[in-house]
Image (cartoon, rainbow over all chains, first blue to last red; front, side, top):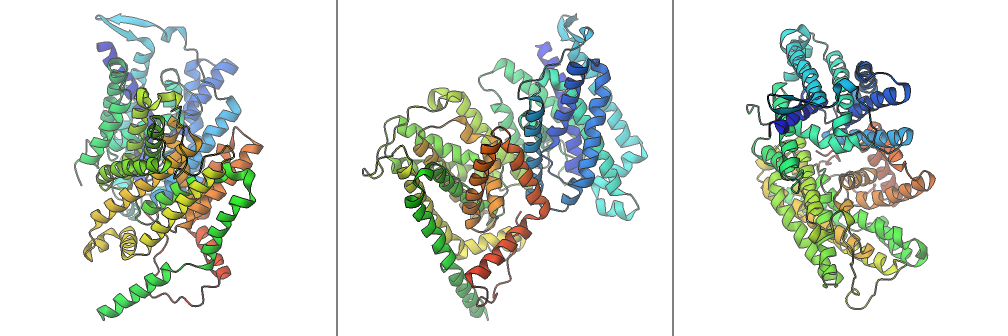
Length: 284
Length: 344
């Protein structure tokens, strides 16, 4: 029981790291980016390829799994995404679906369609017994890293100058621009950072979520659930939403496997219908 | 003054309702392919079905401005309804079509209340969620749907008791084309009616539409239900003519594909879906003959390019070109303020 809770929390934390970049994209520029999962996949593949083909140790690949997608995100943002901020949501959806299709086929072409397996270092394998609860070492590792990231993000958002500028830009880009805040620079930075986090999440999650070319499509819905249920104006909303989602998903698959993902989708619809602005947000 | 405006609107609608030469030609050519391209009937059948599916999406997206990422829900429900009926001995195709349309319409009616709420993003998510829930149900209820193995053992009776389905797909194509054509006529009649006009005003500005007394929600529920029924019929056609249904009919990529089809053809006019279906299928055929596994990449690239190049500008240009060819530009003064093709 507690083990399931623990696994659920680890899963939820992972989802949060994967999805929080999307929360910012959606909240800041109101951009529906369905291709967010592609950045996560990029991170995952960077780790998998570095480890399996070049023998780089797992931990050393993680920074690269962050930097690679971040650069990719920055380049794409400056060249392509930037043009679509003012377009309709339909255009954004079509554009990002196009990107997903391309990413899926490109990865399939370069690495094959099989699942990518990564070999965790031995000190991260196995389980230990803490107070009678079976705890997976790798999952604890994920919880520690993601927990640290969450705290860091929260501090950056609330305590730093960049954070307050970002929040100002989220609330009202026009006024923020009028106050001399370089909104497009902030957005490019945040987009890159969000993509990097997604990449890191993809790398960390390769073991738990599985990594194959259809990754962006499989998990797109999860990211969107986190963001829409959690709301986009704070970081705590998506965080709580991803924890809930993680626990519900793990518990659901364990206790009622026949129902499957059904519960989550239904819950999402109910939440969206009752509280379209997100579960943890005051109505505006 | 008010009667004057009413007259203007009426005459404008009547003019819009007139069949142009190009349109008649389009359907004549479609009918001619029955005789001239006998070896292509299987793919033409698919084109007709996808065209009808895209047409149904156009009704809600192009005319009412409802974005949907889960239109496959209705398509899939229609396919499964028709398929299950046929498997269990009710092999009459038209009965299957009717049942599929009703089932999909009921689902559309019920879910329309969910879809009407919230922003574009909420709509995307809810429609996507509905399709996913349906896909999950079809996957789990394998006693009814065959689950991941697909629905097997469909045998169709002859259409109207007269025409047996043949292996070359000729009957199937004629059947799909006829159904698509008849439903197209109905849709065409609807969009040039005052009701269709009110939908367009809702799309362009829901607030204003409400202010001039259009019952916005009722109109949207109605068109969503109608579009769902259309999609259900398209799904039923696929199930009946291929005699197989798999979970694929409810998959996300089907919703995405139909959107792509519509976007290629152009959103907001009825031929968009049909033309898009032709272009899409031909492209898919050509690309997958060239690189069978990775055709998705090129489809994605096309999508990205279309969006970046400006979707509206492309279709607008083609349309003016087309009008020039049909020679109808000269004598159609714009009495109504021109409704732009912008949606959402």
